[in-house]
Image (cartoon, rainbow, N blue to C red; front, side):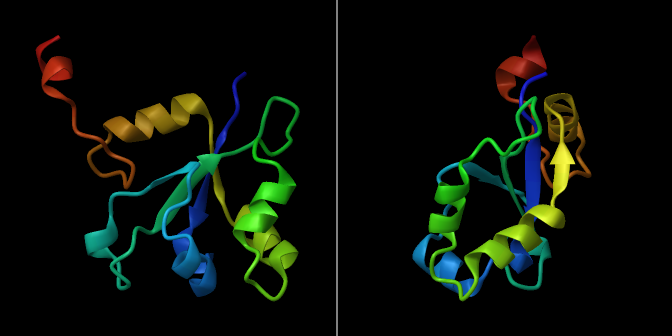
Length: 113
């Protein structure tokens, strides 16, 4: 099994983190920004756990990402514990569902072939 993905609730990502790092280099944002009250995507998808159940991203890089928080470990714990975990197959299935916040319309090549 390859690694999983974690969908983090964007409302739980602190303002300071968003201010200093408006885009997280390892993530993919949901496509529902126009439907949320904040005008931001509702979720951030990151690489999740490897086959041994350990986070793919090192703890030190995730804590560095949250370095402006009073308690980055507590913030990270909240983000991880409230996340939605997807397998690779689950995620790719979500990409094809028009009602999903992860939906990606097919490209011309995909429509033809």
